[in-house]
Length: 355
Image (cartoon, rainbow, N blue to C red; front, side, top):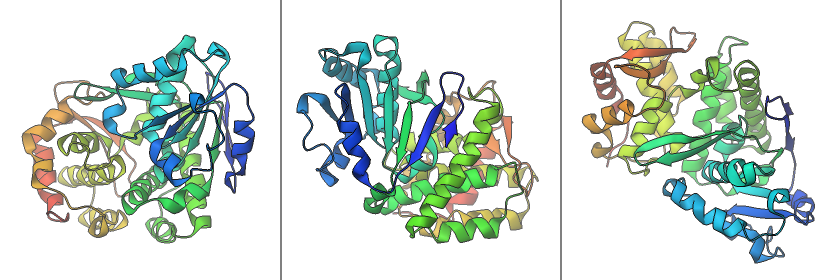
């Protein structure tokens, strides 16, 4: 799969085993930025690499900051290849964001390769060129667009995911299939595909389908100025929920809840039928989400504060991506009132499990 970009085109390469690492390790200018948990689970990947060329990252949201990035700069600047070094990023979205930001800003840009290791990263974030850091209480407001030169997608990494990481990816897959404007969403077909994701071939089929949707949107709006904004379906509320939970609720699960809230707002506005609302919640696996929520996560004032801080907000009201009909047909609504969010939260809270 070739992704066209105004910066530079890049390739998504599907591989069947971890053997491709031999090629990556053979590059004399390679420097690896790796999730510490991946290094623990797959010790053979980097076992024979000079430790002076391996930077391990704990994949924590608190590490997506300028302060932490400075540690990466300090590690990389003594390396003699300088601008000619090749960064190899191994991990999920957090590792991708940190590495991509460093690659974009160090020496005014150095080449990098991405090996996504989570379902979420393989089905979503690996494509799109975004690099993002958090600043104080604001999520993903620092960064830019700087794609890797090549992305390696290997299904082996998905075999060691826990339930939370697995469901996080499912949420984004469902989102893409619902937003695919090349065809009307088929709820039954989506449900059948998602229900079969315990099979490797089904997971890869879902990943290919998700990336195909993303590729089609990026072809029209690479830099997030219009149509691509619709991918924030579920993200406006989801980002606020991540913050109120101190990131105890991982991104993908927060987005699932955010999609529920967006659907509830659409229901309240008469844009969506009750039958469609119920079908969507069933599709999102709400009763079986592998997490128990705490009431504090849904503190109304903190949620609204988070939505006020959302980088997509452009006016005095709140901004959300919501369905405009039972066919989804998402729209960007910049006139959401706090009261609408409060009512939507009351509606969806009854469907979640709480401790």
